[in-house]
Image (cartoon, rainbow, N blue to C red; front, side, top):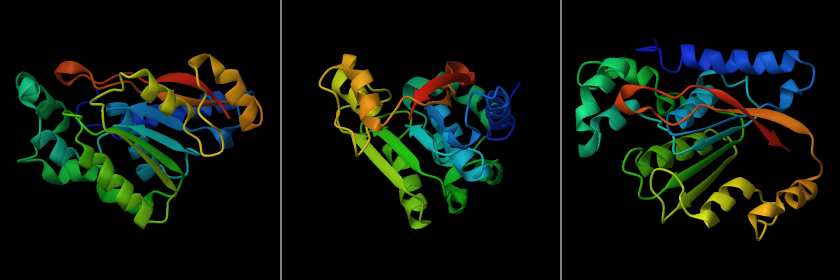
Length: 219
């Protein structure tokens, strides 16, 4: 359904979801951000680069920034999916111009809103360089960027302390000692006003991509 429409049709779905929430009257449209991991992280970067005025903030969790490189570096255990991915996204040998067009890295000059990037140093699927370069490019553009690298993680954060660091990472709030202290963290942040963000899901195996789903955050 979304073959060769990445960073366009699916991003439009996220934008329309934002508008739907804003239309309820319960959500401040100026405080809606976007969050996602893996392919969802790509959606965050695409939103920041291709729709720079839509979301107040982005949280990219090991997202793809350069599709040319990512498709050229498919790990051996994904070899059986290579053709499916090439069909869905493009072949870097023949579709480089198209892939560069949908890769946020090559459009990072448009990123202006605050961005947080989280990356596992040992990620074999979305290489650390994907995050390194988009962070460098966004910062060079003057965008406020916070970058967290977990040296003991790969594609996904498995260790509880790293999951907590991801949840509670904010300069003005100490990380709670236990996961159950979320209410205290929200109080320290200065209230429980609701906002919304979207998690777009991890990339599906076999070339399928995850669906967008709204999640609630508190600021």
